[in-house]
Image (cartoon, rainbow, N blue to C red; front, side):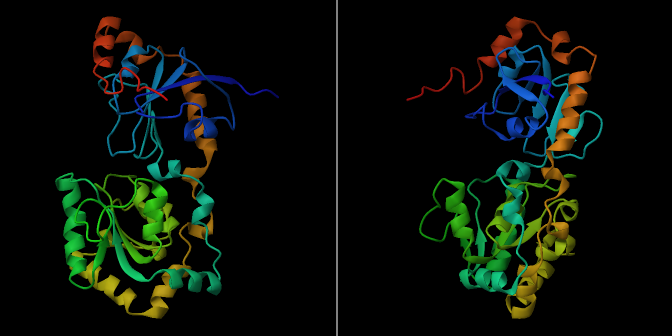
Length: 315
């Protein structure tokens, strides 16, 4: 039986491969996805204004804790970190990072000892930009924990390892793998907002020191990380980390604990609900909100302010 055709395009993602990405791979499990300049559905993000040139059904995506502007008529539907409700579908950013099987543990004593043997350093910290209040929480915790032992800072901020890490995600993971812990603080604690920070620590097999939404315990097993958000003060959280660091049995117990509940990838990685959501979008009889918005001239004026306009030269 042939799949229904889904004519799709992307805008305002910056440098982005339209033909090979998470959205295409997930939706292709149910649709015949065709990338076209005349789409039925446009998925757009925060890095420009080209989406204003389109008058089709628009789906807003963000990996930040930014709600969709439904009231302002900017989009018809949205993919955000907020809980699924109405026209919004929860798609936490960590889902886009790769294979969830990388977070599935063997659960054997041999695995635990193998991980422990590579963790020769205490704690990692990787922050490269100062976002003011959003960054202050993790910076404060870095200084508190550093009073106990050196926390290796591999980003551009507070760097103390002789220079920043290389630019790739694998550079970051290689750095993390030699650490027992990683400070994995979110920019905020909005409902559902879980990003790459805890995921990266888990893939590298660090014990994440997490701060953010309480909803994280729905996605990941709380016995596998230190939830700094759950402690009354940061200093109490620091004391818990010191306790784990000095108790080999407790430390290995946390290394053995599965990251996922039941050691199975959580529901956020299942493409079926996302495909259900897009079936709902396709079946929506209402005209797209952009049809009732500003004229073409206004949309073009906004689009030309896009920092990716004109498109970057290719070799």
